[in-house]
Length: 289
Length: 326
Image (cartoon, rainbow over all chains, first blue to last red; front, side, top):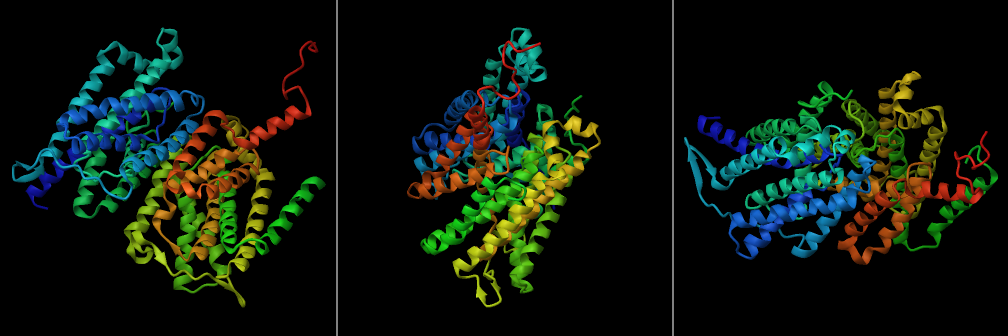
């Protein structure tokens, strides 16, 4: 592996890690607040990609505007999911999780019946050409994902640590009962968490739409990756999810470059299994008392 | 069955008579449906074994696939008889299940669920990755249907009776396990894990045991399926099929041994009736799953138990009638 290829792989790793982080942060956040485990997170990603397909590829809107449309649409989907599935099944984590597996089937059918199942929808790349970074050639679309993800993660960090609503959300995640005693509306907070969770999945899907083939079943590999990241990072820990995303991004990209994509997935799952044995609470997770 | 009262015995006898006579009165397509139903019956009952300890897994269909692949390899390469491939495939599935559960018992509840999904995917990726011997993404074809003496199992009716026999044996064993001390220990883990640990039950060991036994019987189901279909491929054991298995179990409930069976019977009818709506079927099943989890989270068998209690006495169990207190 020469230095140009090495540099290219590193940049690709960062791009992959950024996308994983945007997806997984949403999943970890919903799980942290009121233990909402969303199996349809991959399908939210898929819907985000289809929103871009609809507005940008079919209706000719500018690409950034299509991405901005995907965020509120998928966030609304998250809110509806919270209201119809997670709130009635609040007492049982597994029930909510399995019910969203049903939701995943429903979303696949609805999207498949609207835009066709068999055909892959290719979204034309809005930013042609490749960036030349010290001899390494990276497509512009991939490079642009990194700042977009950074902006999103920074905004989320700012919201959680500096804004009152965000602090309330963290309080809810730490101790729902005490948070309620402080006058924080739990139902509003779970709704907010699912909105942010949906927005993150939708944004990731929208950004990746021109790079990936868009199909109703594209959520499957996404949810596998997101689960691995969340288990590795420590279930409820957002910082852990970000850290694990970049680790997995490096692992996946390097193994894909040296071998192939299937092996990369296998190595990723194996890493998760090892972490489970050595450190069951995850990289940055805390042991519950 | 054993030790139950005469009403249950009579009911079982009637069911058995119907099961034995059924293939002579229906079209051959329906016999295929019956065979698949019996295979799924073993699968759904085996799923309940780890579920009684509180471990809902997402890798059960993959473990069935391990049984199917093992059968394919054993019967294609070594030309083993169907009487050998089925127990050997079950042992292989049990072993793979045992290896998988070793990291899994470090997790509980939701973590167990998604980690089992990831490990199941690892097994599927191994099938996709290695063209030799697993055939890669296209899987393996040309698995013999098997034969017993001069009986060729390519014919649906003999195979139906073969599967019926095996299903009865497996169900009896699983029913006995459910009633045994081990089965009661499994349920104790779910009811109160802390208490179970305090009275000296080795919790991780029993959870691993439940998972391995479930994997063993899933392997039997996989072996029977592989011999019938004559082909296996990684897509046949993916997460969507697993969600269908979960729908059977959720609809039926896991409170009693009969719950998952009830769910399977009901959803098999729905599955056959919804044939004209082929592409909308996942939507129907997904909607059913959400409906049950939101409105009837303990499934139909729990509902039946509660209705029976209500019918037998107007006073709910565990509640003292008002005014009779000391």
